[in-house]
Image 1 (cartoon, rainbow, N blue to C red):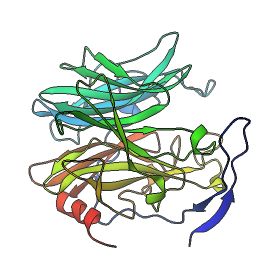
Image 2: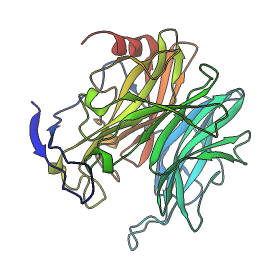
Image 3: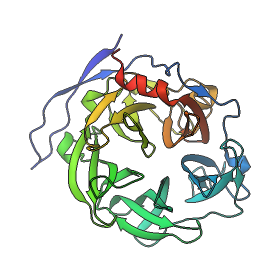
Length: 352
């Protein structure tokens, strides 16, 4: 049974009036019965890399030129003496079956300058034969979302970067109504009561550089298994019934305590699934009222940097109808679940 606790954001001089809001604690959550965790999990981990690594997670995965391609986040440089990570880069791996991965001998992408601290959390979408990568960028003046394009994973051309604060961007694999479309997750702390309470939005662009016509897609209040924030997951895949897409949903419980390597980790991340209209993807056709993936396996719920974290970043619809969903687990390793596309569509459209 969910419990309810009232939270009142502190007043800030010159800020909008603060409204008391109720944030129900979320109880036990379970994964949908239609998903199957792959027996090879984790499919990629730090020890698989031929260069320095502590954590491998939050990967973008796609099919390109007949092979599976993964670009993954790699946090490195922490030791027992210096527990803080010294850097983040993006690694590259290829696979013939989507399960066994061959890691390239060196990272493929790293951002760092006087202003930029790091780039991370890639998402991959193939559009008209080219690979587009969305990624997050930590700067000294806020978090930005970037879009780059590559043909060989050696040279990346950065096409655009948002103003702070925005991230978790994913691109649709084709134009809709003549424009490119992306899902995104701005995080307006000031305008949302001074705390996490973030939603999923959509914007369009004629050229992948200039973005506008932004619309709200899904509010956190519409997700029964979230009380903190939500955001896009893997880039959408096209089905006859609509754009099938995952999202991440976060609930907070301050009683969770340490819950990982960090001094304190009180959040739980789950993966949700929803269906968007083919012609107007700002319209949610249906959504499962329960998580698609909840942290239950040992590599999801324990032993990690941040336990109880499921973060979907790649989804591939095979010709057979099988759907491969790749996700970061416990902010530590990369994992895979599979499901049948018809079962996923039923989760979104059948009343529960």
